Every structure is written in structure tokens, then in C-alpha cells.
Length: 260
Ligand SMILES: [Zn+2]
Image (cartoon, rainbow, N blue to C red; front, top):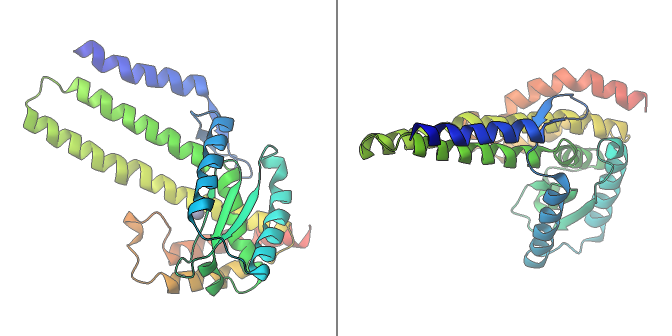
């Protein structure tokens, strides 16, 4: 019993050390990447292809041209950080979704609802910069890797507690489940959101978009999402936290904007 308990964590540790750390461009932070990037990219490309078949794509020529133009300018700036990306920028037709997302490898989509908040090309550059930054920083791989580790930890716990009585064991497993969701996975993804804000703002500025647009943009976003869950349980930073962090990085972004 004790043997099994040790075996899985050891295997995981070996896996972690073998697969190594990835350095996030722009911030220099070390991140855990357990899955080969090309594998993750081809999985995302397949999933994105399926999404495009299931979701109506906008035919608005202005939206499409704007998203492609801003996306490509930002991708050009991000190219040294992500030379193998296969960028694709798509506008999904859904006015009720004030949202955008990115998938590993370079697939980026915005919903038409975002144009209620993104009024100018500088505003849209804040969105596209943020999404391109998620991709270039490898956040998808890091999340998958964390989930793999958490799943491994749950398995190890199950082996190690098999001689406990079943009530205690269930309680322990439930506590562990809640702990990994609230304690490990969510805060990390809030961290990813801040990091994407920071890197994205630099990309937007380097691509020639005014980073000061971010202040009004995130304020309008916060107004749109009133009644959202508190920051503690949400994957997105609360408006005030975001604004404070934006002010911290604005001087660096303004320098990049002026010296481009
Ligand atoms: Zn994000």
C-alpha cells in the first residue's frame, strides 16, 4: 500500500523534471509544460475547425477586416516569441457574447458582442493583444499540465488512503477536489489573465496602437459584467485590480508605443 502511494508522485516528479520548464516570453517567468506544443496545436486546430462549423461566422466586412488587420499586426510583433504559430482570426456572429478567446497554436476568435465595448481599432488591439499573449505565453499548455498534475495527485491520494474508512476517505477526497479547484487551478488562471493583460498591452503598443485605450476599455467591460462573481471565485480579475495593474505597466507600454 505504502509502495503504491509513493510510486505515482515519484512518476509525476520525474515527468515534471524531464519535460522541463518553459520560459514565458516578455515576463521571463518559468512555466510547466508537460505536453509537446505541436501536439497541443494540432488538437486545438481540429477543435477550432469544428467550432467554426458549429458557430455562425460573421459576414460583416468591417468587423472581419478590422479583426484580421489588428490581429495580423499584433501577431507580427509577437512573431519572435512564437515563430511557429499558425495564426487565424475569426469573428463569430453572437451579439450576446462580449467575449473573445484564443487556443494554443494561434487560433483566435472574437464574438460580435465585443464591438459593444471595443469601439475603435485601439480598443480592439487591447482584446487581440490579450488573446495573442495567451497563445505566445503558452498558457494553454500550462493549464493542461496543471490539470494533469492535479489528476495525478488525486490518484495518489486514492491509493494512499485505501486503508482509511470510506467516510473519512470520501471527505478527504472532496476536500482535495475543492482545494485543487479553488487553490491551484483558478488563481493560476487569474494570474494568466493578468499576465495576458501585461504582455498584450506591450504587443498592442509595439504594433502602433495606443495602450491608453485599455483604461476605458476595461472600465466599459466591467460595467457590462456587473453582477459577475467576486474575484475570489472568478477566472477574471475584478475591475479594480485590473485597473491598478494596468496603471503599473502603462509607463512601459507608453515607452514601447513612443519608440516603436
Ligand atoms: Zn484572457
